[in-house]
Image (cartoon, rainbow, N blue to C red; front, side, top):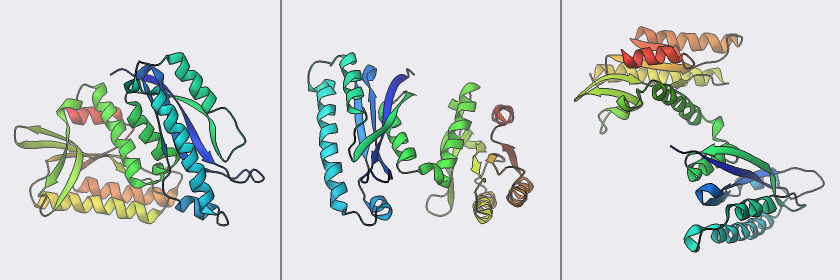
Length: 275
């Protein structure tokens, strides 16, 4: 699939020039070659009220409203559906003018470049990273691991053999696996990337034991494929206490007939997927 060169900038709310304190509140992304310009701004105000306790929140709401109106005006002007296609050089010029440094409350951190197959999806991902900080959650970390495993499968032309599937009975006990290989009606193999590099040792136990329990329950129900692979991401060996917990969990998974590999072991993942 074709990739487009996009420019994006992080929107910051900086109410006090004296202190320089700010909060990331949005993303603006421009991709003239794809005819795309759009933005996403923080709608809730909890982060603003938590960080700027003394600030009248109406100041932020008014600043956001004015800024949103201006961005919407630019988006409508550049939208090819509004009339004839606009000049790409003009789109670059407007984005450069929009993001130039200004001494205002709603400002841009700087312009960066990213390659994207889907600019709209890229906007969502950037907003999730820089504004919502999804990288700090367990679910987001496992999404990254799933993406890495999918890229490994694509590199070996195996990705079409694996589909996401919920194993078990949706009306009783079930668990979702992002990669399941079937032949006819029979599930032969399942792959589930697992993030076990939590800063809190208790979270390593909790998440690991949760998936160990899922494996045991699904096996007891005779709905789990005989061959299961968990590519895992764990703490560094120098983090002795956390690493020992990680080894304990992965050892118990292995004792329950789950093959465990490190997520960076691409050759082992391919070997399992092919065999």
